[in-house]
Image 1 (cartoon, rainbow, N blue to C red):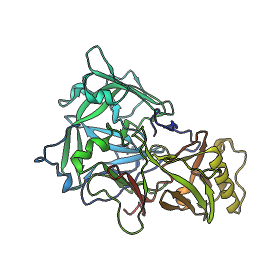
Image 2 (image 1 turned 45 degrees about the horizontal axis):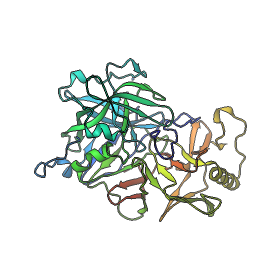
Image 3 (image 1 turned 120 degrees about the horizontal axis):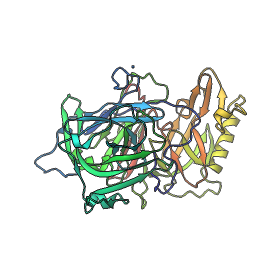
Length: 424
């Protein structure tokens, strides 16, 4: 999900004409921190019927022991579980590499979307504290203003019109380690949202911002877990809901081993998105360049777990679709309003081809139809890419499935490793 003020400004909640429910997957790390992702229909799902740099003498146990929290997919998003406050209150927020702010709906919440679970009540937590207007984090969010109580009011918008407004605060966040031990991290900055609107559904309790900005969970956890790094493995669409996966943070989350390819992360004024350079996509052995002119801008796309389809500039999309059609020996579905302009085919099983190879700068990543075609309904498979009118694009979470993907914000690289995420 991309925040509205990102360079590309694409919708956080893209208009997808197919109804999707997915699951994020994950990588196992020897150290660092990981968050488990589970399907909403799993028996383990609850929906089943800091910012303080530690002392060198007080390193958290994440170095010895990966930490895990349950997360589950819902309607095209990946919901990551965190417990906040004292007593602990479970929050299921969208795991989003396209934004920074960690926030949840808070009581009182007269201007909020419908939510099945109770809302977090800061008055019930002994560890909650509002940030003052003068706090560095209030200035860092960019939209912080001063309330009559001299606390930091924020407003954080997303490209599709979604909006959260409330108070910026600090809280204790608790995550359970692989050994079952609960690890509490104090003074993590988050948004207590009292007015939240947009394309959220009733199971989504907020957003866990995993971007590269200073307020993201990745940045706040960095000093605690051995560095600003994360990796994850996304389970393909329609995977058995009982299959679990993880997101890993910090030391031990590095993507390594045979088959790993890496591409530079491109630094821009907006530090939130993970910008990468896509030079083109091959359909079989036929290269479709990103630009008809052959000139490619550095950082022309960014990686976003909060956007399901991959969004491509109109000209590139049109040329890619034309070549995909050319290599599939069947007629696409025409004039189906429910599918809008998507490239779709009638088939009882997923297509056998073609293989798409995404040519990142310095890294070729092969994608099978499991990643590039999704089924919105029985016996229909659609290309998991759509068009946008901008010059850049978003690399959505369909294309990211069945890959162990890592971001190292210190080395400024993104890495990819072919992985069966259902077994990882």
